[in-house]
Length: 224
Image 1 (cartoon, one colour):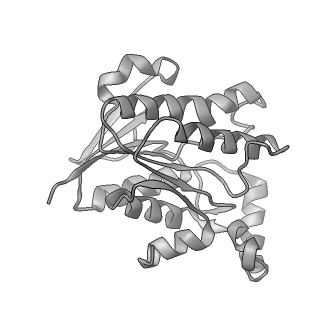
Image 2: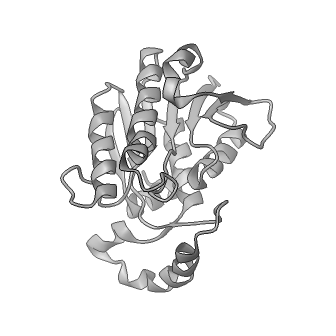
Image 3: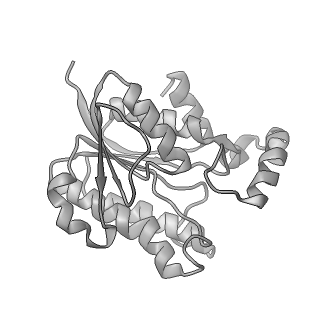
């Protein structure tokens, strides 16, 4: 078996943590390299943790290479201090700069997390930013681009978010209302998104592919 190398950005986040665990357990994965500002609290012979300064990411160019790059990067306006410029850097600038370098170093497969409803023309800043990320990612030139577009993510977070704790209790009860076209906005476990991302990393199909709630379920079941 020809094992693949995977570059993972956002390994300490809700989806990223699960992605890392799945990748380390996959036989087809030879090496996983994480890019982060602080060490990843996992020890594994397959794992290489690169501590980098994302503001000066070009200085680390020789380390940013793999068969596939996965970005589970993301932040919130609260973490960004309410600064849209800081939010933009973490949501678009840093992951795209890493993706471009990886592409220059021979990577041909890019997988990343966007959001349901993402659209560059949206009047909602979050959705507009995610939509811009999608469009700019396609300009890099990867052979395969897999875009995952979950809505509300369920899962245990490192930080406490009171509103999300309340929503996690309420939203699952409302699942019955997310039918037809609305199922793209149905809540989904972060682990499910991560599992689907890792499945697509193993077997890339040329082209641009977008995965909403129903598509993610299909990938997990082996239908897609």
